[in-house]
Length: 524
Image (cartoon, rainbow, N blue to C red; front, side):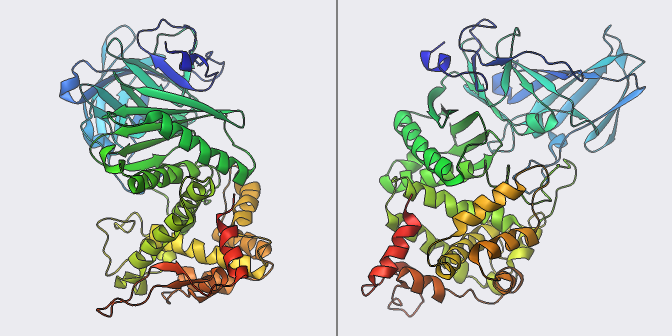
């Protein structure tokens, strides 16, 4: 096992299928006392078939039947995907090998007759030929597994732990944020419960590149997989470490002991946040230019900021999760829009990009908001609530009738930050709002819209309810004048064809005070 793995202590799972169980470098936990876990074995008998075969032992608790279900969505991606449609050949047997009756009594449910056995063995095959960050992929040199489309679970038993064994080709390695299991075969992991299994993607391959670093006592790994030729993995890990350190300064702490960046270069694109990891899909070639590389850092920074904003500081509706009915919240503008705002800011504040990169990115978002008419039809709160019913988050959205909670949410964050800074003479900012909300609401319950707004008003020392109502619950045009005046910015002159341009630029006559305000925005 490579030496950089041996330097990573308990909590970060980076295993090699060629290593014996218990070999030096394995991060591991013993099987704790408590409810009997579900035990999954995931095999890949034919990589070219793009499928995985799962065999699972489900405890029955003495019941005559066990109801199994598949999730229909993945937290963080607010779309129904019906993973059960990709499940085939479901069969069950007793511990003695006798076949048991299986009834597929709903689209994503199977009822197993137990015959009085203490546990039942269920096998099924999952089609794994998709490259999104919520689905599964099995190929000749790479495997990507997400929990929701992979693991059946006992209905209404989300707190039961799980053990996952991977049967990989010899010489392959796997990576995940799950803990390895002590005294178990290589590539064996433990999930504390079903939420943990769903929230911990696993990648495996014959060509994983792993770079590690420590920030504030917390261990991190950047795992590059797929088409990594020409990619400077060491540089990327060093740069990620810089904005992780800036995030730690921002929050005052890191709320985990280990975190894994699962960075897969392949066709497709997108990222999904998880509590102790993120799964990224992108193209190394697409980010080979200096500007492209900064966009990649912004992308990774966004997903990482989610470890705090949404995985821990979350709207009250986003947990506990119902994996068969997606939750609706009016606060995705906070979870996604403010995450985009701070994802970009952390890259600038850590010195990885110039101030102009942030202004350029914000200009693009303002243009995306202001040019289509959807902003005059749908409110920001309605956009969030409508996430399950329409594509209103980006590419493919109906720009004539909807507005993106990503885009308008980010712009709203920019304007809210400027308002708080102006009201407090730069003594307080949206940074303070996020930290105060985290201190109050990052526990088990989450926050309501009213609670978040109350925190913002308290930090600003002024009642912001009218501002929030106008920005969130009406289709009135956003007022940029306050932010422009505070930072000494202006929109560039109209183009020669008369179309309005939304490019932010620093005014040539900006005062020293205005320039200081802008510098304060970008200061670590």
